[in-house]
Length: 437
Image (cartoon, rainbow, N blue to C red):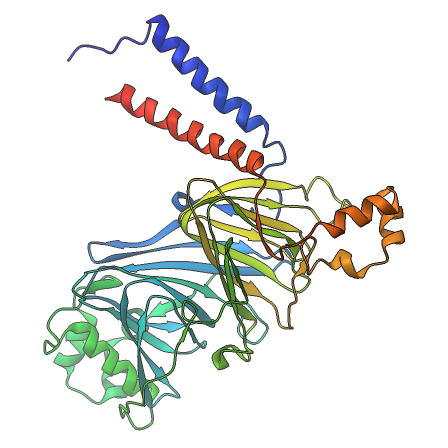
């Protein structure tokens, strides 16, 4: 093939128009992502890859909550009938199942093994010190098991970046020399050599036939005996999970639905500082402007795309705290610290679904600026008028027209403007791909 000719007037003008359009839209984002902790937005492609095999992958990112605490998020994907090998947890882990199904197995109190089936929408928590592994189902639809997990950072269970979220039992067992292991387990030397000299398995493997004895099963048994007084394996009754998709929403109307899960409605979260939420916005809708007085929100986009608007809560240090506005897509992570007013908006062409984790040790009551539950409704209107330097009549008109609450219809001009930005960005990308072809 000959070289491509990019010198034609039409090609040049087309590219110039597209890039100018993109530039002008980008200029509208002057109050863009900046200066809050490690950044309010982590794009899907910016996650750090931890594991990548033909049977699954794990990626991760760190989030600073605006109060100086570091939180570690991991994204685990297992192909059907795959196995995430046993690890020892270094910090409390709370997770959400986005797609697929499987079985979680873990050691409790050194001498009891528990198992629970997990499926889409399930929430669960494992405490620091637990040893666990996960096997994905070989379901007829062959859907991947996708789990999103946060590792809590508290005084009782701190997350230490230097040692990571967990250790594989492979490393724990093989860290000792053969003589120590043989004396501890009281087994023949050749069995110890099978453990210590075998090829190290990756973190995610094919599950294989259930009757087949594999190296990781031997390692798990060794570690079980090492940690337990009896070496017994007791199976408890099925442990209860909490399914957020089946829970009654806190608010639901034609603009979407919002559901929160806290220690109040899920016992396993009682002594945890982590809560969860799930928001589904229909096309052209908005989660009304609000802020959290006690919690930082770390959200993951599950479906569609949308706009997030966050307002700096203080002008004390404008170089470090700025108003933010950014577009998010499926797989992106965005964070809004406590006391930062925010609003999430869907585009006209798609719904916007996101779930997330909130961090608080006390009950958090979101404060809304607009709608029937607006905090402004409870304040003295004359004081409000003075605060905004407007007349009392203006304040009366502002608050009297609020019919909906929390989930609202977006301003169509605003949504149309940012939907066009999304299309412009996509168009430029497609043109560049076509040129490469």
